[in-house]
Amino acid sequence: MSYEGGPPREERSPESAQYVLYEVANGVAHLTLNRPERRNGLGLDLVKDLEVAVQRADSDDAVKVLLLQANGPSFCGGYDVTGLAPVDPPPFDPESDIEPGWDRLNDTLYTMRRDGEFWLRLFWNLRKPVVAAVHGACLAGGVDLIGAVDIVIVADDALIGLPQARALGVIHTMGLLPYYIGIRKSKEMAFSGDPISGLEAERLGLANKSVPVEKLAAEATWTAERIALVPRQLLMAHKFAINRFVEEAGLEGAVRASGEYDAIGAQNWMNAKFRYLSKTEGIKAAAKWRDAIWNEQEATRPS
Image (cartoon, rainbow, N blue to C red; front, side, top):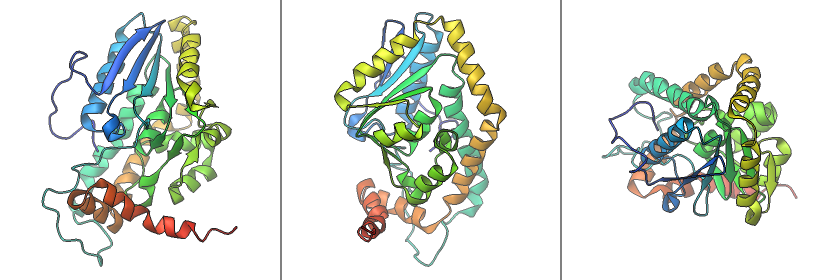
C-alpha cells in the first residue's frame, strides 16, 4: 500500500469526498470513516478523503480538536489490499521461500518508509489534537492510524491487533506500540498476530479509556469538547512539547525502519500465497487460509 507514491490519483475536494464525512460542532471537527461495506479499509480513496478532511480541519480556526470515528461494525479493518496481487498471478511455488521479484525490493523499501512518514505527517505532526473513538475491529493499518493520534477512547469489546504480522509484514509505524505498551507486549502482538480487547488496551496504555460500546460516542465527544476549552495555541504547545520527548528518543528513525523491515519481511512465501489467493479466490479466502494454522494451534492451548 502506498499513499505517497504510485500512479496518479484523482484529486479530491471536501465536496467530492465520500469516504470520510465531515461536521463541526463546539470546536470539534467530527471525521467519520464511511466505507462500512469494506470495514473502513484503508484504500487509496478513503485515505485521500481522510487527508483532505484533516487539512480542512487544520485550516479552520473554528476547529480546535479533531474527533476520528467510523460508521459500520468496524472502526478499521486494516489496509485494503484488494487488487495488490498481479493481474495475472504466477503459479504459486511452495518450494520457494521468497516472493518472486527481489529486484523490486529497493523500490518497496523506499515506498514503505514513506508510508510510515505519511501517518506521522497526517496526525502526529498536526498542530491540533486528534481523538479517536474505536469500536469493533481495529486491525493492522487501523493500528497505524490510532498510533499516530493523541487520545484514544475505545469500546470495551473492541479488538485491536496485527493479523498481517502472521504472513504479510510489519505495519508502517508499528503503531508506535513499543512506546505505548512496551517492548515485550509489542513483540507478543507481532509474533502471534493475536488481538487484544479494548479493556486490555486501556490497561496496557494503548487507549486512554475503555467504555461500554453504547457509551463510546458520547464519551469521545465529551472528551474532545473538553479539550477544546483550551486555547488552540496552548493545545499546540502542549502537544508538540510532549511529542518532543518521543522524537528525541528516535521516533522518526524508528518509523522509517519499520517501513524498511516491512519491505524485507514481505519477501516470504506466505505473503506471496496470500496475495495470490486474494486475487484468485478473494480476500476472505486468503485470510481464512492465513489464520487456519493459528486457529488449529489455539485448540492445543494448555488449560
